Image (tube, rainbow over all chains, first blue to last red; front, side, top):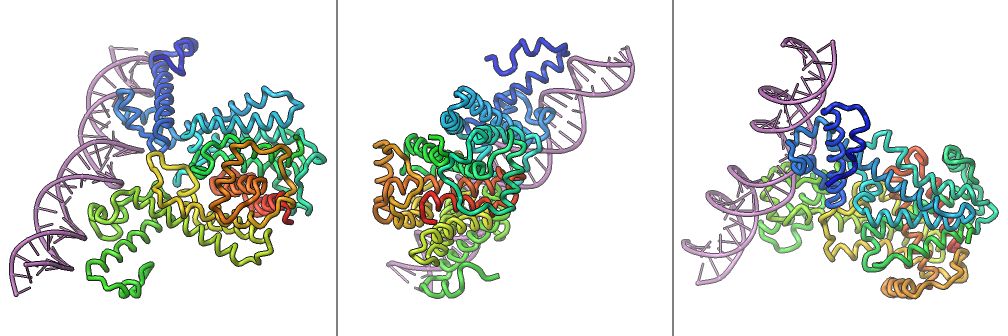
Length: 240
Length: 240
DNA sequence: GAACTGCAAGAGCGGTGCTCTCTTTTGTGA
DNA sequence: TCACAAAAGAGAGCACCGCTCTTGCAGTTC
């Protein structure tokens, strides 16, 4: 069964037998690890089981990955990137002027990806593994969804908001919002960004409640609830 | 070191030596398990480690708990109940007429409990354990927070809402909302309940983002953000 | 061709959940 | 009072885990 690394990829670079074998094995490990993650979840991911499936001694895998955590890190990065891809593609398919459509498409992309990849979603948005500290290079992939949402918020005027705080924001919060808005595609009004951040948390709260079972027996089919939640968000933003 | 089960408790019932010892040991196991959970998280909870701390053979503990999962179940129930207690107490301390205050108190109780007991929070609101199915008797404790929030929503009039959907809700969603509203302290208007449910998910989304690290480096101090989020909720509900 | 490096295997360490058997302790009914 | 049953603890053992270390072989490079 062919997979991620095609013969084509392997032929291109002028690699020796050894380098080619290494590339192939890394790809195989990654593929099998993803399969196990999808089937058994992160706690069930076992270096020994992967080695077994590859017909290798478990110790051999430590030539490729320094630890199980390193394997987990790779899966985390891949998951963030898959979700990021899904959201970016869904949002990019919308008319630029259709702010509500872009928002809906992004949110549904998150939910759909999470429902299709529950264990991957759990890995990146569920309980943190107690001893595990996410390496620096997981940060960028992790921000992709927030970046898409921010780019949508950037197209919303303060005037359109139908939900806004009457009082001024505390200075500390203003600073945090400004620091956040800078890097993420241009300045965004603080009130818009505040509303957007809380809606961002709400989006993942809704998905987590649905996936982790909190909605069980109450909202067994969360489609309508999710859609209504988005409508509320868009109403608050004043774009529908 | 005395603990959960006091001598008083043990003296009351007319129990033989054996029954008293059993009660005491169950209490000890529970206490040590909670300690390990708080220190190492759910994945670090080990039957053998508990037995070691008690000076028992690990096999002996299986006279008291059929499996590690059963131990975990007890911790889950206790965690739900602790959180339920915290929220109920905080809410009960407010003036009945002060709907906004009751909402804020409940939400802050959730967040404060979660920050004080991150591993317990992760256990009940984080990734579900792949093979684990929550027994029936975990359901009631799990609904206590939602029950408190519902009791607050029940005191809010449809007229006061400043955020409402323009279109009618789909029939399927109306049915689900009605089914939910019935058992939870009296009928609640569907629009109020819908808004409340999404705010419920948002509350836990905010707390999870803060605790699980998604807000890291962006909102290192989430106090102001959380307060502002609640203000937005209360504004939408029209109670401030 | 020699030297060096990368790689695989196997044994082993300490840990896990859980089961089974054996022995001791305790409670109880005749 | 004493025998018997129930309960409890200990220990060995099974299959698994992450990870390390040593040994030997196979490519790579000079």
